[in-house]
Image (tube, rainbow, N blue to C red):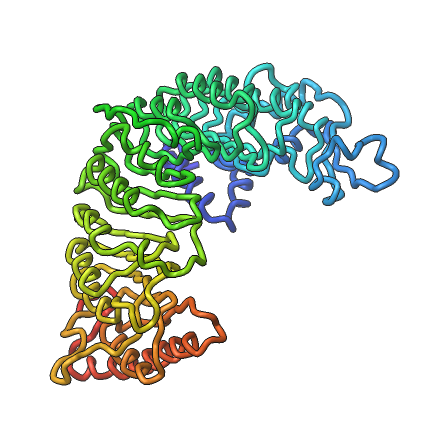
Amino acid sequence: MHHIFHIVEIVNAICGYIYDDAKSKHALVALAMTCRAFQETALSVLWKHQESLVPLLLCLGDAIKERRLSQESDEDDFPSESLPTSVINRGKILYALRPPTTEDIQRVLRYTSKIKTLTRGFVHTQTIHPSALSALLSTSEGPILPNLRTLEWPLRGVQARDLPFLARFLSPRLTSLSLFCPEYAMDMLMLDLLGRSCRELTSILFECEAGPGFAVSLRDCLLHLGHLQDFTCTASIDMVHILILAQMPHVDLLDIRISEEASMLPPIPCTEGLFPQVRQLTISSIDLHGVIQFFGIAPMPCLEKLWILLDDDDYPALHLLEKLEKALTRQITHETLTVLSISSGCSDLPWDASKAIRAATLEPLFVFGNLEKLELDCHWCYDLDDSFIASAAKAWPRMEEFTLDPYGTWPPSGECHATMMSLLSITQYCPSITWISSHFEGRAPAVSEAHRPGNGHHAAKVHSIEVGNAGISAADVRDVAAFLSDIFPNLRSVCSWSDQDSPVSGRWQEVASLARWAISIRSQERCWYGNVVVDNGNT
């Protein structure tokens, strides 16, 4: 054997390269079985990431058997209430035939220390009976996987047998934990167990509901997790939890839902020094009150990406929107924010001019001059014009994705002042634009015959645009298609949210078809003049 294979780093690199190719993983098995120099490294790579406990259970030899269930003969051995529905439907199950022997245990222990990642779908899956899991538990008195770093645990409701099994996987070395039980409440015993056992955790995801004692147990759990960096929780939390998270020095990502009770509290005095490292924030609330309450707590000097999700199914009060914008512009460093997204559950509400959002309401957001993605997807009521879109494009020259509520309610066709000319402004002032979605009335732009519509400006990265429920007349179809083909040389589709059977929807489809035809002609024309548009927007 060549002496180069005694260098551990080279062997690791070879095995890692083979593992990345899914079709060549059998080569690692061959290496482990035929070459001592590769054996331990190849086995470590093969066992490092697991999506099921089945391979580990099979290491118990003939202590574990697979059996096909039948509706009659196996009812006594495997009562239906002890099995998940998926097991019964699948018809096959791994079960323990006898207790593991010393030889079985040693065989399993050889591989348990190599597993670093165990992903969702492994526990109580279609093929594992609780007796088999119990046999696995008996192989060690401590954590089953002592070197486990990442654990995804899909709970099928909180059952007594889950707790001791979960406890055996919560090793002190665990750094990432995801618990999935979306239809059930999180048991406080699990949170207490987590806080005691895994103090090195840096990432937590709880997809669950808040059960009895959840608030107190979560508070105590968070107080023990001083290394936490990412925290995601779909259950509602209150201001006590938020203040604890705000004081954690390493938290980088937050995805939280504010409880309805917390949103009704009086404002909390602003405190400096909180949220020192938070860069990504997703905040859900029943309405704007909770979001305004949250941003009143402290400045967020490092925030780069912000998603706000609202449950409210009505138009927001304009004074609340103004309060939210004041809070955002006061608490977020203007130069750091690159993504701003606001969405709500509002839909199918009629046009109401008294509740319409106008330019003056959105203009304070212009201070975030480095925005790369703006997404307003709230189904709110708007009355904006081309001049506002032009001002927005100038304020956000780095914009790549621009979504201004294409599903929202805009003035009736013929009264809307946001037209195709808005697209020209975005093209001129946002050279990196890749996605445009809003309500653009399909009226033919007034363009001088002596000049091209785009005046040499192209958005070559844009392949599709959305125009919402915008209207367009039959007389304007060709002119709009010609206009779009000039400023979007790689345009493939124009999406309208009008009724598919309506004439308006058919006209926008005709616009897209004519635009593609005109683009092919213009591309030949540019080649003749030596002015070729490539996909990075340069000519």
